[in-house]
Amino acid sequence: MAAKLRFFLNIRTKEQIFFQQHQTFHFSLFAFHFFFVPLQPQKQHLFMKIGNIEFGPRPVFLAPMEDVTDIGFRLLCKRFGASMVYTEFVSAEALIRDVKSTLQKLTISDEERPVGIQIYGRDIDAMVEAAKIVEQAGPDLIDLNFGCPVKKVAGKGAGAGMLQNIPKMLEITRKVVDAVKLPVTVKTRLGWNHEQLIITELAEQLQDCGIQALTIHGRTRSQMYTGQADWTLIGEVKRNPRIHIPIIGNGDITSAEEAQQAFDTYGVDAIMIGRATFGRPWIFKEVRDYLDQNHGDRSDCAKLAEHCGPVPMILDFNAKLDILIEQLRINVERIDEKRGILHTRRHLAATPIFKGIPNFRPTRIAMLRAETMPELLAILEDIRTLLTQ
Ligand SMILES: Cc1cc2nc3c(=O)[nH]c(=O)nc-3n(C[C@H](O)[C@H](O)[C@H](O)COP(=O)(O)O)c2cc1C
Image (cartoon, rainbow, N blue to C red; front, top):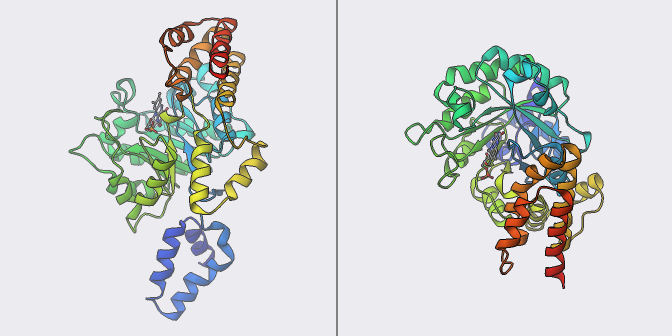
């Protein structure tokens, strides 16, 4: 009983433990000892945990993103302090059919841990089989995608399409949890549309299926990526006293200040950043430094240095350009010249480091049209010379 209780307490967050400690004062002295005493030697568990994965204060995750969060990009984000990274979503059906390009998406490296592999699908048995295959690849957790809004996925009942078939979503979740030993987590949205904002009840149902963390993107499926993410419902889920699993908030975080606000205002256990990482993997350092300074806890910085070697304290234009060039080289090496360049274009187009350069448009067009490494590298070096002259 005591062991069970300790386990129960371990997976609670700092705020909930605080809340619980205070609640216990209303119980009998026996209850006080029962709840409070086992907590004393377990201070290391005061921060968020998913299964056995321990995070420091205010963790910042890299969002799973198709065609973006490949191994090269994940490692870069990790270097700059991402607390957890995810693969892009992987089709359960394709995994079972042994599709080579899909199997390649399961490649992970020890350096990027903790890393989650995310799967999606509409068939219960396929999802269970895929989860077993994924488990063999050795990630730290398996994430189930119930949030992808695109027609080719949600239109077929997978991803956010599951928001229209909650019994099936819950059955998949329950069966996957039972089928694997790894922690299973879910990423989803607020609901299908504004008439069906079901996340508060859904969070409880998913928790009851045995998931160990829930990521909520503060949009509905109907919104796709338009409008603004609504964090109020994410905060409501977090404040629900029935919820004891970590809640990871996601949507529209683009700066360290917004990250801090998400923690302070909505009390989430972790935040997840997606699009703001394009051409800016160092955003994790910006956010981490800011959060740690304002939270008075540098432990994650120490952990980061230990894990990844020294990261320059100040990243100037040259350092950032070097990082983008490194990313380009990694992609070309990993795929091939043509597709590696194509793969990096999204980052070159979005990076903030070229913003505000006078008369940049022709250079930008040339940069985004370049098809060979020498051509692209020459353009990037010209920009460097121009800006550092
Ligand atoms: C290009 C792109 C690909 C994405 N692919 C995935 C995916 O594979 N799995 C997933 O759960 N979400 C995916 N998403 C959604 C993001 O994980 C995230 O929920 C969304 O972008 C909102 O966060 P943000 O405002 O920080 O970008 C994708 C988003 C984008 C822009």
